[in-house]
Amino acid sequence: MGVEQILEEVERERPFYETSGGGVTISGGEPLMQGDFLIELIKSLKEKNINVALDTSGYGPWSLLKELANQVDWFLYDIKHMDSIKHKDLTGQDNKLILENLKNLIKLNSNVVIRFPLIPGYNDEPLNLVSLGEFIKNKSFLRLEILPYHRLGASKYKLFGLIFPLSHLSPPSRERMQELERWFRRMGVACKVVW
Image 1 (cartoon, one colour):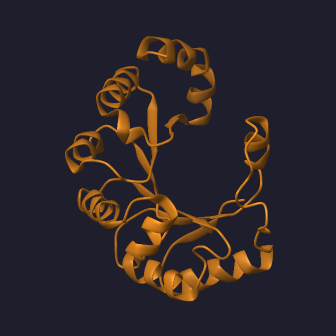
Image 2 (cartoon, rainbow, N blue to C red):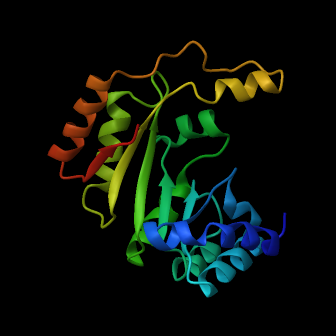
């Protein structure tokens, strides 16, 4: 699908954007892996006065993020693990570039929502949560959103004849999530659980 086709789809929804104050969220995979296309798409959306949110892991060249910072209205920035080795075990990449890019985006006063997908047994250990809180607590970002693990993606695996690798996990309880939200707030971090 090219930029023009996407713009046609977006234009059909314009009345909704105009009444809701919303816009287009670009996600993936990782949108930063399609840099030239991403730049062209966002530029075209902004020319039509459409708000743009970019859902990213931050794993991409700083030069691209810096260029996009002036055009993107909100960055939805995923942090999966604070420990570089564990991050690499979980994602295939360490987190050095991701954390550095986040710091740089915040320095540019970009509108950043930090998103933390909480996966029991993978990234919910106390040391990781403390490290995350310490890393972000004195930085200028909009808020931390904790995204509790769910099984909604399991059906997609089945559809493609694959085994869902996290089927043994149970979603965290509502009480656990509320407890984490309060804990981050006590650290001085604006926090919200997104169900």
